[in-house]
Length: 185
Image 1 (cartoon, rainbow, N blue to C red):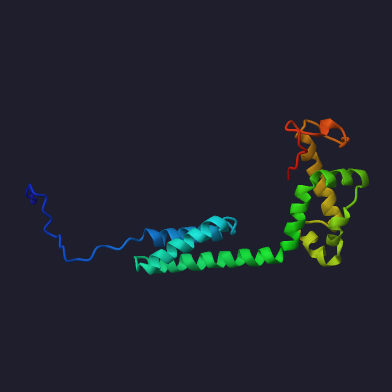
Image 2: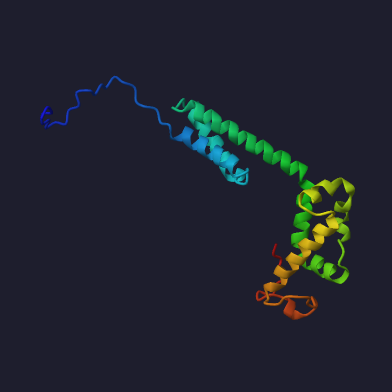
């Protein structure tokens, strides 16, 4: 037994003149949130990026430990935010059309069942400039994409009420239990 009993719990190596260790939690948090945001394809940008920026800036401004982690977290979050802004600007028209479709699903389902064609609101996607987009999804044209999408959509749309197949949208049984037309994507 080389150690002696120390009733006062005195640490011989303790030096009160040593500086306190700086916290690293903010730097690590900034880095982890920034990395998660990138790994999750920026789908969490609205939540993770601002938090990552805040923690990174706090760690850098207070000169806490983990400067490299904090800088990396701030850079990753900044990239995510820039990507989000650019993609929202580039896809503004598409996002507006998706919102229009969701908000007016009953109209588009009924129109599709009556005519079997793409509504005028979405004919612009039949333009040849979008052909590469539809081909990347495995379709020859927007007409093929819309037909396939609407076939699956209408099946889910009507299955909410326990029915499959065509229905008369003017009848009261078209409404779901809450008295509202279902708008489900």
